[in-house]
Amino acid sequence: MQALIALVVQHGLIVVFATTLAARIGVPVPAAPLLVVAGGLAVGGTLSLPALLAVAVVANVLGDAAWFVAGRHYGHRVLGLLCRISLSPDSCVRQSEALILRWGGSSLVAAKFVPGVSVVAAPMAGAVGMSAARFVAYDALGGAVWSLVFLGLGAVFSTQIQ
Image (cartoon, rainbow, N blue to C red; front, side, top):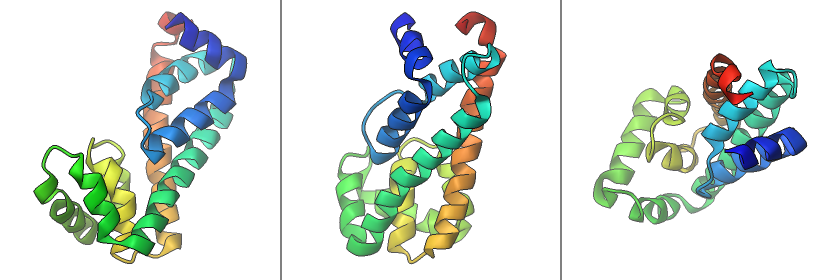
């Protein structure tokens, strides 16, 4: 944990951006715990909370946009690939499609907090034909809520993190 804190203190915004982007693309990196640490450091004055929020949201949207474009161009083939690694590959595509069609853009906000669904929500939005503007708006909102939750947890536990 000390190494993570030292890395965030030294390279703050770049580490948060790169880790969050990698996580949204699908690399198994600890983006949420990193945001908690960054939030705690921001309360201590080491990092800027608004800047952390901004880079985390931009990284969220860029990572998800790559999957959105893949879903738009390759449709259910991309989803089939992602669902092969899920716990229930047979129902993965059907459930994800039903979620997006039923809840629309708001499902992109909720999906940030649901493991498994978060991976397929962006490409599914592209595959079902959601407009790019609507996708970006809802994904940015979801990224902001997700980032604020973990930055906020860091703020709450800032004494322990410092």
